[in-house]
Image (cartoon, rainbow, N blue to C red):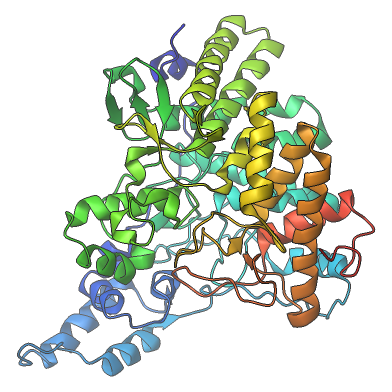
Length: 538
């Protein structure tokens, strides 16, 4: 039985009316945007696209045209100096939304109390008035931001933040977060990377079914039925165009292999430099002989993966210009799509929709077979990402393998080999490192990230590897405790090879706050309530 987007469409609810989208920052500010971003006027390229204008956009762009005309006779030099340009921007824009405060109103020395106090600090309320010149997409309910430069929601961050909200008794915020995600799916067909206009052309790892599942653990199975329209609509987004694919073809996020298997990749609907990383993307393309559009498309697709960036996407692990995201079928993404298909099948079956349940179950079974067959090397005894043009796995050994445990993809024998890889190739004194290669990319060694630790711990326990799960948990918690004792901070990512060292790599400095770190640690404290800095030391 073949699953197609066309087969699903009739059951979809009408998309609610939403306010007309404001233009992207690049289109809104034109030459001003290009001059600010290409010159690196701010240390962080995200700063300008998140700033709020204090005057109408038409007035600001007219002012800038007049300013440039005053310096029109400037030869080959920039017509407006960086100093003058900076003064122009600072006089017409505010930074009130570019940074999220990460300090509770009162210092909390207990790490559990610190996390509980941070939820209110990181919570944003919906605003009755929407500024059409702001890049922020409005949401109808309260939401939690990660912290620091990330002063908006991020899709897959939300799932892991919710783990902590539940343990803190903040079920109200959990419901708000799920309802916001459902709103975004209704409005745009998917949950964007984040609630910014410049994120709308892509999504992130699709955890909406998992978010619904978390809420169902508290509110009951009826939650799945309530959000069924949105779960189906998101599935359509990821499977868009599949019915027209021929064998060996790809369209957007779908790939149909030569033998007919349907799988998914990451994609972005734009092929230009990311507006929030404009200068960085321009520089990456300029350093390579590849077609710039090809580089930018792959950078954007890499950003959709949430692993922005990692050697797992690169043909040369030390050269970002060799990024090839769209040529890779990611292991973790296809585990998530299998989970989505399985949840949709079981929900329809409970409702008595047996034909639709069979359609989704057939898709889930086909994907499970592909995951165990194409994403597994029997010779090397490992899972990996699949290069669909080459019919081969990439060389990258990385922590995305934990998805096969978390979602029950691996067989018992495969799970034993995954556990072996985790213990002997990725485990470090401070937790699991993200890959075996130390590069300048933040989703590589020596860094570890909270979501991957959580999925490894829960996944290993699912297969009975409790000793290793407990070891990872205690080492990660010790790393968190140690940094908190030292700096009174919880970080976006951690150096797991040297807990005295700072996290390495990335396009921006490591941020503190931090949404998913808080969520995972709060959930681990419920599993290991006696954990302290002293008794978690490796």
